[in-house]
Length: 394
Ligand code: FEO
Image (cartoon, rainbow, N blue to C red):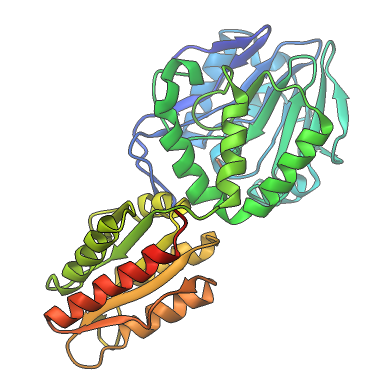
């Protein structure tokens, strides 16, 4: 793939990773991209690099525009290795003494990843650096999503280089939102649900700050996926909406099953919710990846979790999912637990305890079925569904 001109004297020089399907436990069915941006100005500037195996590909793209040795300034918005892995190759090519701008935490964290004594230039929040006709402003975005994260903004271009924020794990021929249209939004939503959901309160504060600053945003360039140029406000408004996590009339029934008893309960709850006018989706944890379940959890008003009892505990996939969901800190959810058991029957209580610990508003006392659901167990599932439907917003 060639470098792509994204604005006057600014180029995308990243790499598309067509084959990656797992991003540290998050399923990416359509690959991803690692975006890096080259600015031709009096001081030629490179913003971010790519994952290490793609470093030569990136340097080849840069070489089609300018000799990499002519790069004067390196900017690292984020230390995670999908963006910094290419730094050693890049710094070697451009010159190890070239200034490397990053946040103060970036300096600390990059030094913990790479032994080289690079010419670090740690910046203050909102520090400005002139690169010629342009002034770059560095904006600390600590914990969005690492302590070192920052944005780089070019006011002359109205372009925000937003690091991971507003990204999507998507590999495709398109480089811009207007080339793919609405089809990119499910990727952006999944990315938010699985990477940024836990930082929702910080995102809302940042959105307020950006509005207060009155930044002109003609283009938002994230480090993954397509660039937002047609309507950058679309993704920013979506982030605000997702961060609010306002409950919706929607339910997700997450479960695993051994001999279909818990499955029958899950599907009975789903049917009863649908009958009450609640869009409800049963998601079997060995058919649906945890990251796809979390995408549905993002805007669901109710999360109902079922597990059979296995060896006096919960089913392993349910434990995996609960651990994952707990870390992502979903808010404003109604919760409920259900499941079948043979003899000891602890799972429902354990699941309910986990949901309570996540501050879910619990409904019912947990529906349990002995071996195979009897009609009265299924009636209890329907009753639970009706109670949840009554508590969800219309
Ligand atoms: Fe795309 Fe936090 O790395």
